[in-house]
Length: 484
Image 1 (cartoon, rainbow, N blue to C red):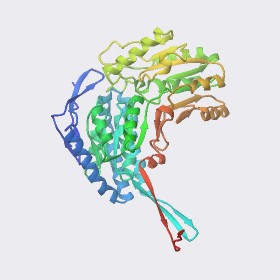
Image 2: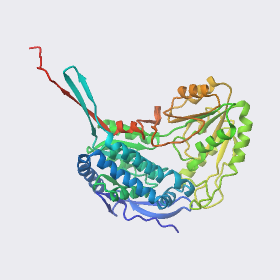
Image 3: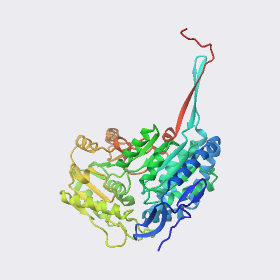
Image 4: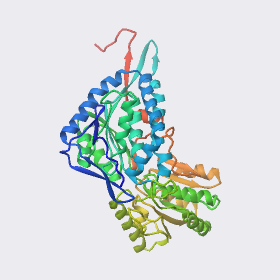
């Protein structure tokens, strides 16, 4: 049996810390259902210890030059790349995602974020504004202590996506991973401090919702960055707003993927597979509403069914496996419930639709056709390997239907008419759009949503604006005039 027990449950002030009086958190390997580690939830004393360490460490960190901070972040990126395989194995144990995937998409993208923001750290300057003889200068300042709350689908990546820009700007962080995947963020913290990060600058504590609420509402926290569901986001956003904290909300989606009749069918099928079955469908930006123009619907579904034969379920640690389990038994049950609703409400089951006959939390890649816009599987985020295929006739019709959702995280279009492609993405009500591809998220590009799918942007230079404040200084070079 796999054993992934960490040195301790928490990483605070540059060291592992344990407090066994906290409620136990079992880490379960989704491929077997077996417990591979037991950690403990942060007690009030642990929460206070982490926030106090972050508050003290931030002062030391912010006093360093951007060049010094960037050097440490880039050194951490190098260490992560050197240890990519062991970190990828841990990610697979934590999430159940195939090693074939984690080797290229998880720790590596975390390293990209640390390298990118490490490179930006020395460039974060203000500006000079001349006003006749007077002038203004601006100073870009860190916010202070940032709270990061992670989701369970990309634990290493999210720990870095939140940590890298926060740290580059001179902030400190207290990061709470999902209680479902508690292991990977501890390694990120360990590596950052090994690379030279001062004690207290990046802390990790474990816990469920109550621990997150304690972090969000603490007056020492200046900023909250959450990756999670829309209902959780609404609660966290409201709690942060009560105390006028800065927020970044990267929430869920029910994103449209439109395939026009002139699209390359194989490319469109590839995009639909990436947008529905990568990470077993557990990706917030997934294009789970696939709108296919009627003339090519039959050809699209035929090719899709052929390609689904290439899904290899098995031991996620075997690099031949390319399709893994749900992250937990609870998530498996949620997804199976949606599949039953799809059948009950009259959608046509084209492929999959049931649990796999094996240990663990595996669900077959599932495709429904003849889906209508009012069905439950068309309206609600499923977060599993369930694709809904819709028919459409005209561009005008499909655009109205694509945007008819509370969500606005991502959207994609496949067509060989580039004029139409740019017209369609201009019309999408979504923060992250794709033309003739899907679900790529390089650190150089902003990522985030609109409407209920979020506030703010992660990655790219845009993220700097969400982890700093600009101070304006007016300098008068002439006598002061007053009305009396």
